[in-house]
Image: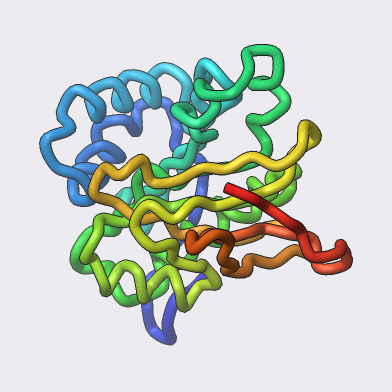
Length: 220
């Protein structure tokens, strides 16, 4: 793909074995004080490439390349902490309910050229093709430019502590930001589904629902 007239062609691919250091160096732009986490990511990519085995399902690390240089990265996983809160016998099946964008970063000279959007769209396409229903991103509270960026790409921003309700094969369940200084952005990936905000007993929440189904009732 070409981001802008006259720009270099940016290729979006899975990370290859040996890309760990370059991918993690970019990932460090998105998080701070996470050296052990990034060191673990380096080893995983160097050993497995961009499809990383996890306790539940696989994580995926995508890279944006300009020539031989890695100038952007996105790392997405099943929501491990949420899955650990689910019944043990349901976790494997629920890995495709959600995918969570853990890291998304682009090198400074390549920003505002569509690189991050191309990474996000590629990750969404992979998840959609696998049958995943919802995409999540955690945004630092108060990071309004990031919130606007996701909103322009079809995401709904949850308020702090506001749960997201969705249906699985086992019935309704929910996830939230765990009150850790972040807010969730959520987007439906499958056709015929939408996100709406509702209120029950004075509590607001977001509901992911198929547009042809009757209005869901949920009592927190």
